[in-house]
Structure formats: structure tokens, C-alpha cells
Amino acid sequence: MLTHSTRRWLAGLGVAGAFVAASASPAVAAPAATTPTPAEAHAAEGFDLYANNVIVAPGGPEKWVSLYSLIEQPLTDYTVKVDRSAVSGFADVQTPVWPDSCKETTTVITCTVKDAEEASVQLLALTVLPRDGAKAGQEGELTFTVTTPNAGTASFRSTVTVGEGVDLVSEPFMHLEGAPGDTKKSPLSVGNAGEKAVEDVVLFYFGSYGLAPDKRYENCEYTEKDFDAYAFACKIDATLAPGAGATLDGSFGFAIPGDTWAPSEHYGFATWLTPADWEAFRAEVPTAGELGEKGTDGVLKLEPADKPKASASSSQTDTNPFNNETLLRLKVKGDQQADVVANGASVSGAVGKTVPVKVGFTNNGPAAINAGGDRGIYTIALVTLPKGTSAVEAPETCVDAEGEFGEDAGKPGATAYTCFVDGVLGKGKTAEFPFSLKVDESGSLAGTIELMHGGPDENLTKDLDPSNDVAKILVNAAGGTGGGDGDGDGGSLPITGQSTGLIAGLGALLLAAGVGGYLVAKRRRTRFVA
Image 1 (cartoon, rainbow, N blue to C red):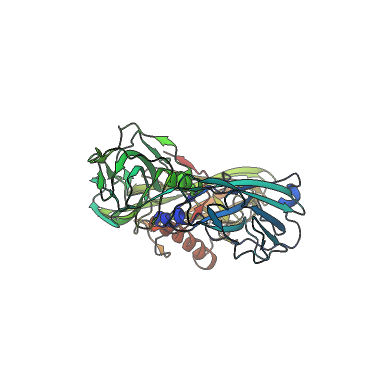
Image 2: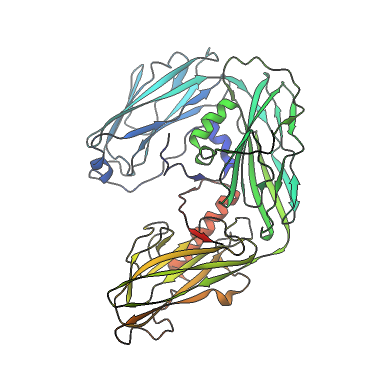
């Protein structure tokens, strides 16, 4: 299993078929290193590996087995040996193009990497194809052994299975329209375009805030409810004969939350999988891996579902996993936006003392913010600390405003912070950012908290009342005068340059979470107050 830190939100399941067809994603570049990394030095006793399992089928697409090192910093020097002898009779495990130093014998692939300029946690990816004559039910393991000069040796086994090939299909698009608070029936459909009966199916859905599940069924697993997107998977007992089709029963639909921004558009993706493909899929995709909570609103079924049971003696896998997805587009009608208010602070403390300072913002509604869609806003706060104070503690949802986006979260010592909320903030809710400030100078020390609102076009925009988007942060330091006149001598950073880049990055994140693409977002808790 992947570590918890790497198994966070992977949004945009319009590429779900690609994950089923190729269980590997491109390597993520990491900073180069020419000496043993801190992780290598720390892991002298060993480290962990992970490689995914795959199911191949005669006539189906190639699959990929990717090997990862579960270590904080990527390895730069290592040797990988892949023993493929247990699968060579039915599967063609090909020598990878990268690393380009790989050599092979009949049963073993050996790849050596030295002083990698762009190290990655992904060590290699292997193409796997069924051999001519491969039969459903054949199974074996790939054995990976990784040796490093500084972090020891580790091994891992990955399973290659030959499954029965089937072909699930679905309508490519579904268009919905409604107002905040409406429920829209959504007869998602699935068909069998193959020559063999399909035994049971799994519906996996991922979508933005406006497309919330109306019911939560007993045979479905769901993600938590406090994020700006929804995901669920439903295992449905049904048999689809060759050429047959079915739709979800009439109870299924999506609920448009009453605080959805309007007008706006929201998007979702529905993907149909065989049970075997689903198990492989959920092990690879963080969003799918985080499902768990089951519903209580009865059992979701397919109609009609009275087909005779198929006699499936082995795992089934989709031979064309690119035609079983539906893109949902919801048009939300109405006129509903939001006003967000900056909350400053006023505290007192003696020079040399540390004082708690809590700032934040409140959503006065009526619409929720940070809720995706093509019109809503994502609010962040630029917190400029009073001149004459220094941050000794900062919340993890705040980063150095002059640093790189996403780096140094919660790091003390900055003079200004950009603070964000990683979940939906409804009407009447408050996000709080608690700091601990050391008083370094005496007098009336002043700073500011200034709100910035980003739209999905990555540009700054406005809420309903921009006049309340700035508030003061006042520290009355005993021991003399000076250090500020109470009008914010510390000043706020202009909304240009670095700050614009930060809001643009968050705007891009919001857009990606709404309409697709790869996005791994590490969630941190922000304190919400009703």
C-alpha cells in the first residue's frame, strides 16, 4: 500500500480509463542530489517498496507495473532486479526504456541508476502484455529487489493475472440543469459491448461540489463530506449479457447543495469497472483508496437486473477501458454569491513575551466558497504581521507569502503569510489561523489581514462586498511608544507579483479539482467555527 502522505486526493477521473489500461503515471521529478539524501542516511536499516498488481487479457491493452520507493526523498543511486520467471510462460514483461542502463536475461531484468539528475520515487515502469496462448486464470508474481549503497536492500512482489476479457460501455456525456436545492434524477447507464457476459459491475464517481449524491446506499462506499468534491463507488450485483444494457434504478440522483454558487457549472465523471479492475484501480488512485463509509438508504440496483447469472470462473478485465466513462455537466441556474469578511485581532503583551494572535475570515453567504465550479471563488488571506513582532508559531495552512507556493507550511519566522482553507466554507462559518507572535519592540504595532479571491480563470476577482476584505492586526506592546502608529506601518503586500502567483496557483488547483487532470493535494485541517 502507498503511504498515507502519498495517498491523497487525485482529482479528475476523466482519465480513469488510462489508469485501468496503464497502471502507471509519469514519474514526478524531484530535486537532484549528488550525495546521500537525508532519507537514505536515516533509512540505513532499510526502506519500503510498492508495486501494483495488473490483470491482462488476450486482445486487451498493455498494462504497466510501476515500482516505487516509499521514502521521504527519492533515491539517486540504486540497482533494481526484476525476476519475471514466474510469469514468463503467459506474460511478456518488457525491459523498460528508462532507466536506459537496463540489461536482461531470459528471466531477470537488471537496471542500475547512478547519480540521477532527476530522482523520482518511481524507480521504473514495466510494460506487461499477455502472450499468445495465455489463458484466463493463469497467475504469477514479479519479484523486485532494490539495492542501494546507503539505504540497504528491500524486496517486493507484484501479481500478474490473466483475466477474461470483457468490454463495458457507457454514454460519453450527460447534461443536467437545476437550481440550488434541487435534486436531479440521473439515469447513468452501462452496456456490454463484448462477446461474454459480464458478472457484476462497479460504478465509480468523482465530481465537484454541485453534484452531491442525493442518497447514500448500502452497497456504496463514500468519501467524507467536508471536502469540495464527492467520490463514491457502488458494487452492483447484476449480469450483463452480450449486447445488453441497463440503467441505475429510479432512486439515483444528484442533490445540488442549497448554498451552491449561482450561476455556475459543475462537472463529474462516472466510470464503470469490472470488480477485478476496481480492486486494481482503487489500490492505485488515492481518491478511490480513501472510500470507506457506507450508506443506509437501501441498495442501489440496475434496471433491468433479471438477466441469468454468468458462469465466470476467473477475474474479468475490460479490454477497452476508454469507452466506459460518462462526463457529467451540471448547469446551476440562479443568482447567489457570497460576501467574505476579514477578521483581525487586537492583543496586548510586554516586550519579550509571546502572545497568541488569531485571525481569519467569515463567510456571510449566502453561497459557499471554496466549492469549485466555474464561477465560485476561492478565498485566501494575506497576513502581514505587525512590524516589531516575529512569528514563533504559524498554522500549517499558512505559508511564507514570499516563498514558493506550497512550501514551508507552518514555518515560523516569515513577515507575511498566505493562509488558505482546503475545504468548503459555508454561510456563517469561520476559518481561523492561530499564530504565536513574540513582541520584539514596544509601542502600538500594526499589521493587516487582507483577503484575496481567486476565480477558476486564475485571475483575482471580487466578492459581494470588497470593503470588508481588510482588517487590522494590532499588538499593544507595553514599555514605550513607537513601532507603528496603528494605521498599519508594517503595510500589506500589494496584490501583485508573488501574491498574484499564489492566487493563480490556487485558482488552477480549484479548476483542476472541478474539471479533471491530475492533482495530488495534501490536505491539512483548518479550524472551522460555526
